[in-house]
Image (cartoon, rainbow, N blue to C red; front, side):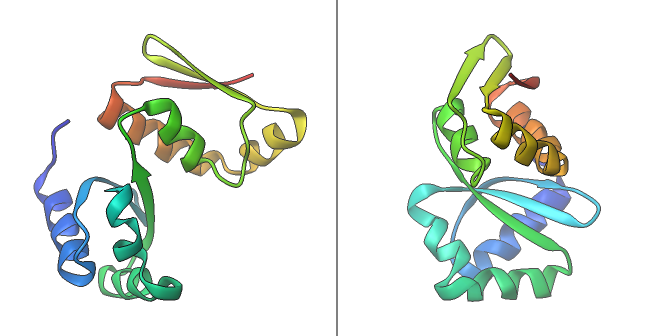
Length: 133
């Protein structure tokens, strides 16, 4: 994983405001998604979301904070919440999400999030594709 200058600036901004250290961030036109260790996610969000609102205001973009884990399957299960996967399989560089029809519909409504997760999974775990079954 390689972090560019702009990402370093945003990661430093999150750390300065919240005290939480981000492992990575992905920048999209209207949103920034940070990967933060589980032990620091509370700091990044703040009480009742106060810290994340401050970060959002200072950066001028929507901000999403996701909990990073060593296991890509566990990361993805947490990241798609409130969608619930019945199973997650890792086949080489492809992750297969098993979803019931209702959760598949919910996931299709969140396609932008799925695109962000694909980018994060690629950077953090080397996963190139996310499929739904």
